Image (cartoon, rainbow, N blue to C red; front, side, top):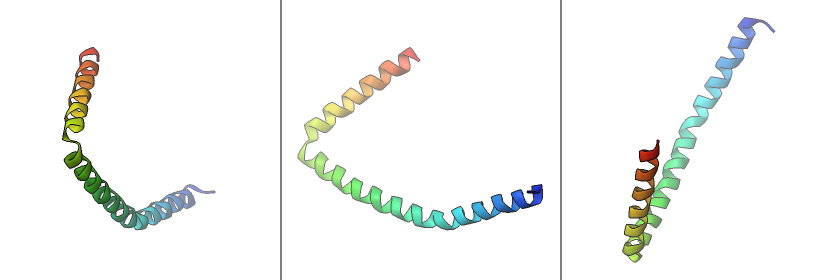
Length: 68
């Protein structure tokens, strides 16, 4: 296999993946929109749990950052 044919193969693969990308982005947007609604409902039902979780996450991140 020559260098020219290898480059042509790579270009073809890039083109195929670029064609698939818009579909994947659309799917990801739909999934994130669905999760956003679920997160909002959970937060409205359990505000205390969300605040405690946010505090705990911040505390853990601060510990990790201090030791890094």
